[in-house]
Length: 232
Image (tube, rainbow, N blue to C red; front, side, top):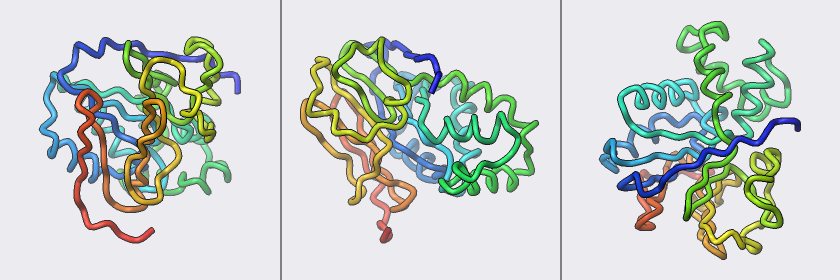
């Protein structure tokens, strides 16, 4: 994978609250419900850890919502997930569906495009949006990644492939002095995973359970929609 590492640095003190969302996979309704529940203000920051597309019913609706909110002055930052990577490189830039992407939830994303009577030509804004997504967000106290982190090397030397695809238990080796928040691997019980050495698994399998939990990182408050969880 030849992608050049993109890191976005933020000043955590600039924000009153920082909310971290795991993999939403097309679950626009869960995102909208959560935004209302937390009473999001323009002094807060929302970090999406990647994988807003595929599997769920309205992937395109999620990206539209993010960009609308950003235009309204809300702080929404989105990390490049492996599903954004596949969506961009296997479909948006090719003009056709690959089997690899389609079988990993891509067909549902295409349906969400067609349901809105859109074509790839209508999605130039989305191509630009995904291309600008960082592989990692860093601040003095926190690191936010989609999948994994190589604790043996400096954050400026990280491999984008590891950040987007890795499933190793990297938290055992976290020596960064920072908390690390990651998604990618869904929990089997719809709960956030508190790992060793200040690491947090934020992919609660929202699309599978039709329920979402997030965390406000400064207070460590967990907010759950409390929807009746369906069986996976």
